[in-house]
Length: 115
Image (cartoon, rainbow, N blue to C red; front, side, top):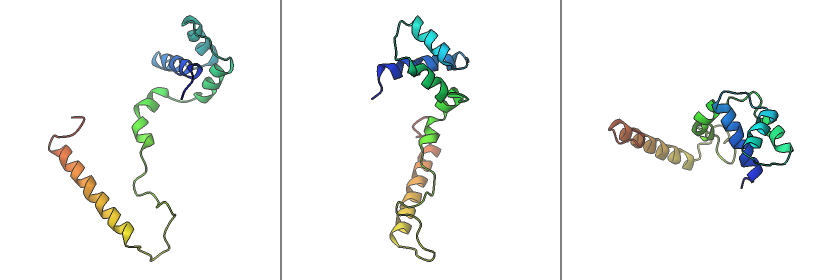
């Protein structure tokens, strides 16, 4: 769970990003002082260094795509030897393909969640 110090710095960084201002420790401190919020002195510099060169707005708008697992990822036990089909993984792949097709057909019919 995030502490109040972390949350205050996160909100200050989001305010700066929304105003298209570069996130620096001094600017975070300025916002925190204006909001009458006291934090441990290392938090603003820690956030400023972590967010240096990061486009916060694009990161927030693509947050769902960052968390998604890559399609066709490796099995949990590692790659199977060449020529070993294993039977069970092939069945799971077929089930996943059918599930994806049904989801796509729902979207095509106008029943998508975000339409």
